[in-house]
Length: 107
Picture 1 (cartoon, rainbow, N blue to C red):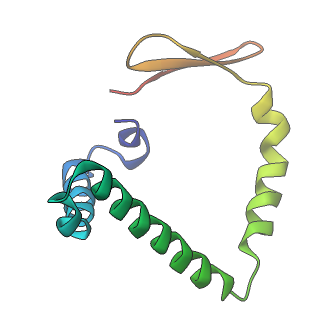
Picture 2 (picture 1 turned 180 degrees about the vertical axis):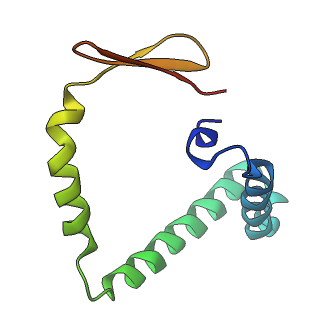
């Protein structure tokens, strides 16, 4: 639900949701018909294998993208630490910093 704030109203989130679910379900078809413990073990093995493959892919990058992200994070870290997040119900929150206050409605 919270992604609607960032993606706008024109984005079809249900399609994204269905694609993610369909992709995950198609990768565990064989495991779904096994007993629960064996199914979970098979899914865990698939996830670990995927993480290792992605790590190998990232290790081949020529540029250190982490340093770019860290520099951007460090510049905003002090400002972000001063904001106070207060949940105001099931569907929103308030952000406060000094005299500034913003209400975020996740619907």
